[in-house]
Image (cartoon, helix red, strand yellow):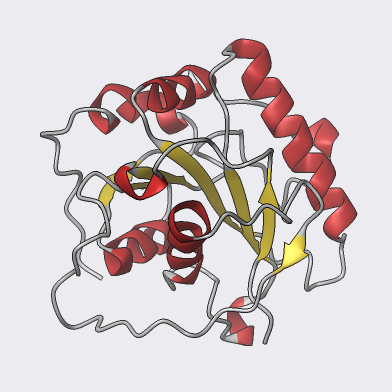
Amino acid sequence: MEGPYVQRTGPPREGVHDRLPIAFLDRDGVINKGKPGYVNGPEEVHLLDGAAKVIGDLNRAGYLVCVVTNQSPISRGLWGPDTLQSIHEALQALLLSEDTMAHIDLFLTCPHRFEDRCPCRKPSPGMLFLGHRLLREESASDVDWRPVLCPIEHPEVDWWGASPSAPHPLDLMVGDRRSDMGAGWAFGARLFRVHAAVGLQAVGSRLIDEDDPGDGFQP
């Protein structure tokens, strides 16, 4: 089975990326307002209060920012990659209109349904490991705004054991659902769970606090 859609918002940043932490962010209910059903087009993208500033602060603190989102309407045939592209272009434009440093380096989107048992749908950590690889180990210079499917392997996860160590001790995952926390836990990231009506603003100061271990989670 194919993996997630990959969208890079611009050329890779200059510098040594393997030394930079990554902030993995869920999309709906974290950055933008969720809605019953799905966000089905760019006209339905509305930022949560304070989300742009938090993403700007992450950039200013030296984080790479990667959105990891489950979007099963693609596999359900409700809409396709062109709509996904327009949604993410609108989201990035809104963020930058509120904070010129609110840049997202990479969008990763799982298009599959739960029953597809794919390697990328959260709580599988597949998208987080792919984000780590693309942002730290590969230039991925041929990836751009046009969504491209990227095959990945099923990650091995011991859900009964201890959470592994993330590639960088400050790597973090923010989400509003247990599936987000599960993906972050299986990657070894610091975990921050938010309420979907509030989103990033609730944990903004905590994210850049190097002494904050994040929230507890038991898969």
